[in-house]
Amino acid sequence: MKTSKLAVIISTLVLGGLTATSAQAVPVASAQSIVAFENFKIFKADGVTQIDAATDFTALTVNSSQSTNAFIGAATDSDASADSTGATLVTQSTVGAITPASLATDFANNAVAPVDPHVVDLPIIGGNFSGTFSSEQGSPIANFFAAAPSASLYNASYASLDATTGTAGTTSDSKLTAEVTFTPTASGVLVFSFDVGVFVQSYLTAGADQKANAGFTVTFKLNPALGGAGLLDSTSNPFINPVTKNYLFNDGATDDAPGEGALINSAFNAVVLGDKTLTTTNQTFQTLALAAGTKYSLFAEITTSADVQLKTVPEPQSLALLGIGLLGFAASSRKVRGQSMMA
Image (cartoon, rainbow, N blue to C red; front, side, top):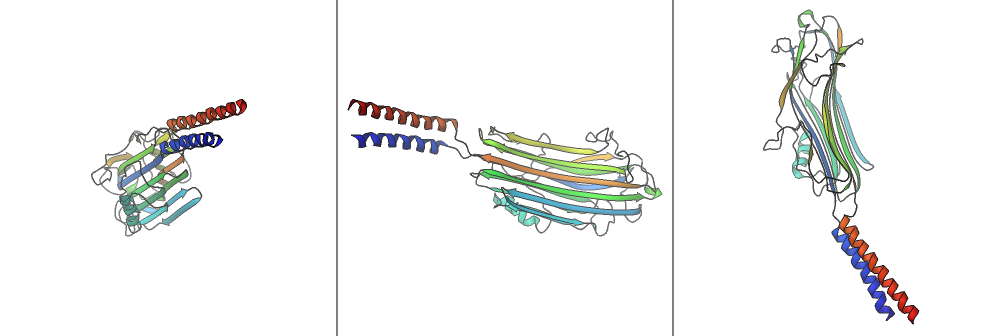
């Protein structure tokens, strides 16, 4: 008789535990951030005549750099490169097996030459990885060494966790710094023109713990090299701060716990083409009048980031089923104790 009662207790516990385990969903956290920055050129005031390295500067120093970082928990990968001759720059960092296959192809191709990054469908099921790459080619001014007379940059960050708890994240950073002194014929107002498309998106399974986050920035600053107020004309573009006179185009998309189970998008997301690349839209802004013989400092930066954090937790119905198992255990225990006392 005691053996029979013990079997009831054990079966009740096992049934409750197994039912809770089978009903527990595997949460997913995914994020991506992409910036396509193309056809960047700097013109004179007419917006047609491009600034020329051979004729329009009495002094010109330029440095471009790309850096990337990726991590999952304590595992990390990072890379950086720098160049001042206008040659193509490519860098990337990954941790884990890149998923899906189309994204893995992007990374493989980017190792050879700059790649226009592709948007992937979130959530990414079956992926535990972080990966980011950054590419640059060409120059915004004509006759700058052997560079093409327009600059294009691509930055992309992706991160996803599925069935693995913990953290994963990526960042990319493209920087251009220059010090320039113009000839008298090149002084005056300059016009900056480029085509830009962004796509920022995050996803966290409904009710899941932790977060999925993605973001981007595009920044320009122009100041006298010896110090002074910014020299971008705040009336020429809505993203130029009227106080600092700096250009800042940025946004993010975050899904915090409890997850919404829906795609969270940036308000600036571009249209995605059939091949999963982005459409781009032209933006321009101009400077205030610049003087010949004065040295100026130009700073430009593009960043992307994607990071996810995940903690597996039982769903509410799983907890309820586990509670039923525990109640069954308690009831069986009381019954056994009662029969023992009667005996």
